[in-house]
Length: 518
Image (cartoon, rainbow, N blue to C red; front, side, top):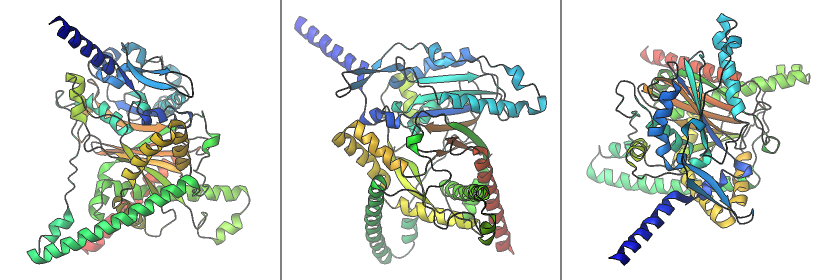
C-alpha cells in the first residue's frame, strides 16, 4: 500500500509538471523570431463608461484561466540550442490592465471637433503600442482601458496579444468566449450559421436515378481532376513566390528589409453589412466574395490616384492626359489570404475550458492562399465582383490552404525555426498585402457588462506595408487597416475609396435590379 501510494504521488507530480510547463510549438517559436515577431491588436468600442474594477474581476473569472494567458515564456540554453517553454505562473491581473490618465482637456478644447480629436488620439495611442514589446517575464497580453469618447464609442478597450499565444481566429474566438449577449448575460454570442450544403448534388438528384448517377460520377471525376491540377499549379506558384516571383513595386508595397522596428498605423471604418448582403443576394455570391470585389475596386481607385500624384511630381501631365489611366497596364498585386482550418469556432469549448477546466484544441491552425487582385479601372463596377468571384471560386477548388499549412510544418521540422522564419518571411515579402475576414456575432454582446459598438482586430509584425481585416458584427462591417505610414501615409483615403467603391457597386446592383423589373 505504501509503495502504491508513493507511485501514485510520483505520477501525479509528473502530470502536474507536464501541465505546468509545455514546450512552445514550432509555429509559436516562429512568431518569436526576429523576422516574424507578430502581435494581434483588437480595438473594442463600448457604449458606456468603462468600469476597470468590473473588467478586472471578469478577467480573473475567465481569461486568465486559459493556460496561455496564465503562462510566461521561459528560454533555456544558448542561442544555438535554445529551448522555449510556457511555464504556468501566478497572474496579477492588475499588471496586465493599463488605465492611462488621458488629458481630455486638450482633446475637447473645441467642442465641435472633440470626436475628431479623440479619434486622432486613439489612432496615435494604438500606433504607439506597435513600438513597444510585451514584457516576457509575464504572460504575453495586455488590456488598455481608455476613458475616451470617440465618434463611434463612449469608451474604448484595446487588447494586445503576442501571436505565439495562438492564431488570430483562435484569439478572437477566446475573446468572444469571454463575452455574453446583452439581452441574456448567461448566453454566449451567436454566430451566423454556415451551412455548406452541396447545391450540385441537390441539382443532380432532381433527374432520373440513372442519369443522376452518371452525371454525379462525371462531376466527381472532373472535380477531382481539377482539384489536383489547381493544387499543383498553386503549389508551383507558391514555390516560385518563395524563390523569385515578386509583385509589382506599387505605391502600397513596402520593403520589409527597411521596415524593421517601425511604428505601424492602425485605422478603421464601419460600414453597413446590409449593403454588402444586398449585393451578395443580388449577385448570388458570398459576403467574402463581395468584400474581395469591393477591396479590388477600392485598391484600384487608390492606386490610380497615387500614380497620378506621382506623375504630377515628375511633370508627366501631358502624357497622363493621353492615357485613360495613370496606372501601368499590368500590375501583379497579390494578397496572402488567411484561411481558418479549424472545423468550428470553438467558442463553447473555450468557454467550458475557462469555466470547468476542460480541454480543447488550441494553437495556430491557419493556412494561406495567394490571391491575385485584378487591378484596373472598369467601366462596369460589377466587373470587379465577377473577377474576384472567378478567382476565389478557382482557389476554393484547391488544397492550397491545407498545403501551405502542412508545408510550413515540414519546413519547421526539416530546417528549424530560424531558417523556416526566413523562408516564410521571404514568401510573404514577395507579395503585397495580407487579407482576412472574420464572422462576428449577429446580435449585441457585452464585454463584462459593457455593451459593444464595434470590434476592429488586426495584426502587425509581418513583412507587409498593408493589412486589411474585416470583422462583421450585428448589421455592420468594420474594416481595419494596418499600414506602414512611410509607405501609405493616407490610410483614411484608402478607406474612403473602399467605401465609395461599395456605394458605386451597390448603385450598379440596384440599377441592374430596376432594369430587370422593367
